[in-house]
Length: 140
Image 1 (cartoon, rainbow, N blue to C red):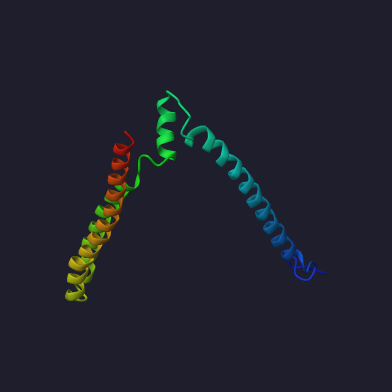
Image 2: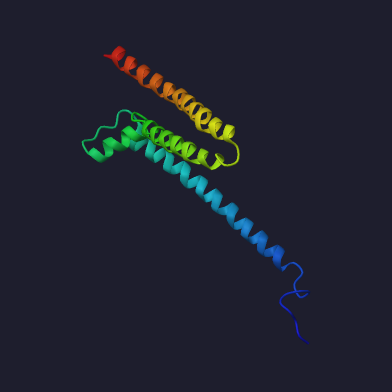
């Protein structure tokens, strides 16, 4: 007799394979959790803790990065704003043939709304910078 694949021979074959894959994923998640926890404590005590002194430029940069003394979000937001404004402006021209009012709404209103959103996010960053500067001056 001819058999076509595993149809009828192993009714639970697919189920056991799926259960095995799921169990493997759960085990890996537990291992990742334990390794992350251990790595967190090691990195904290080696780089983030305030009393650690070093002369290496890389370690100093890493300490600044992990202590959030230098924020990366400001240049990322500026680049994202430029990209978003260009995308909205150029993308609005796709609407010029269908509806001129929607073209103007996206071209003008979209760019104004985008600018307002980015200005609010930049205000938060400016507040952080100013309070950090004030805090440094008060500690002197």
